[in-house]
Image (cartoon, rainbow, N blue to C red; front, side):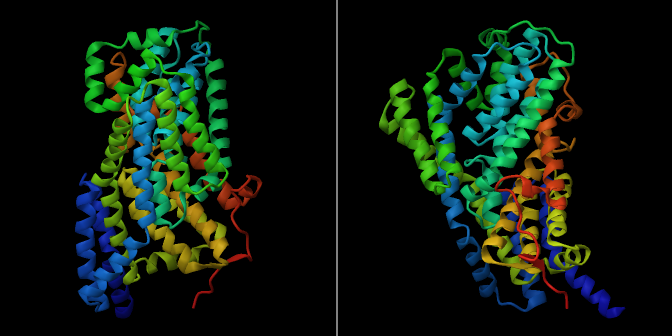
Length: 490
């Protein structure tokens, strides 16, 4: 009994840095503060329990950061491309193309979901996408007499879509970096599944819209923008200035061919072209078409905007990733996650079950931390080690399992947030919706009730993984046993 108690205490102390990191995140500490504190604490725990020298611990941390150097450069390029797509009119062109169809009360939610899903891929931000599209679609919904909650949930779910699969989404890049997989491979792995999720969600939203007895009056998008009160413009600018810029572009108009840079990037990505080539192609063609459209005023101005994108990444997300990688290296040096790894291995009868538990752990972690990035950086290293320590197979098959881990980590962070009433995502969406449409008092269930895209995403990835039905989804199949198998427990 005494031996068991000592083992339990040692295991608890090894995991205590994770508990500290989670506690700090729940207390709303910025991850740039929480990660260094947790890393320093983890260093002391490692020295005490494993008798490591401090220099050795620092080396483990630095080696871990070296492993994500490529992801850091991808993040900088991604932020630059996001700035380019927002400023040159790529995002505005996508909205204008969608608004060319006659929007009625029956279709406003469907069009909103499609527009936000594509725009979020182009901009890499669900929060920015929601902030930019909520004024258009909530007021357009008001004009045509649509269902406010259906439209709100549709644009919320659509905005999350690109954050889960976009090449320039920080959650996509960070979750892929933690699992040590290339972003383009990750996009190819989940591409068909993601497309089916969006298609299924849009169909359900359409069915809901056409069965609610809504009117068929066609609305004018420009009238919707003109209907936005002046105080709403001011408040939105304080919350998300880029959203106001995009709305002004929609109102004044940009050439529809400005959507071509996004199409080129998506085609290259699904062809499996290297991530950097995809991103820099987006930057080049946004510049080229922007010069033609007049949205790029000069080469030096454009390059300054690109530098601004690099700076935006370096000021937060790149530094955050380095600290999180360092934290993970210190934790691995003392086998901190071994107790959790062994527990899940014992209750798993197969690799599919183990992967299913990884997904569930991500979802519960997101609910506990109430922050998508906190879940990714806290739970991500745990599920990575669970696979590495408990599964054996070829290098390629193990890579596919890491791809699924990255997809789990991101999907349960972004889509899972839409089903958690106390989540930071929901709080942000309610805040923006309340600002841009003050005629309704929004509550968390307003975002959740009709968020069919998020519901389908979370349920489907868990069910497909557990049952093995993912084999019917092209490129989404996990390797089956005995190609991969659980290691025998001693």
